[in-house]
Image (cartoon, rainbow, N blue to C red; front, top):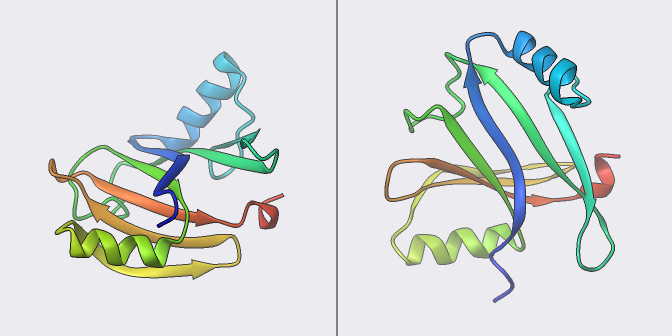
Amino acid sequence: MKKRVTGIGGIFFKSTNPDATKDWYKNHLGLNTDSYGCTFWWQNENGEKCSTQWSPFKADTQYFAPSEKEFMINYRVEDLKGLLKVLAEEGVTVVGEMEEYEYGKFGWILDPDGNKIELWEPIDSKLT
């Protein structure tokens, strides 16, 4: 099987005022924020351009459900479809169905503490 996790795809957290939070990070830490948050660009070990997303969400978002936590980590993975199958066979709780977009595939699982984890098989070239 291919690697499972290849890096951090995103850090998502709840905020009482996402726009003010993005402005604060822009003004005080220099993050180049947009309507989604901030995209960090980097190169992997093969020299390919990759991204990691940082995004505050509204405090009442249901995107992290069924987790009740204030955050969700997105991990970059290879072969999401195969990985979700293996994880289910290993007894890991898979949440919902895999979704596919032009910039990649997404799936969700729960860790033992009930944290929802987003798994992303990216197509970074579609993000630039």
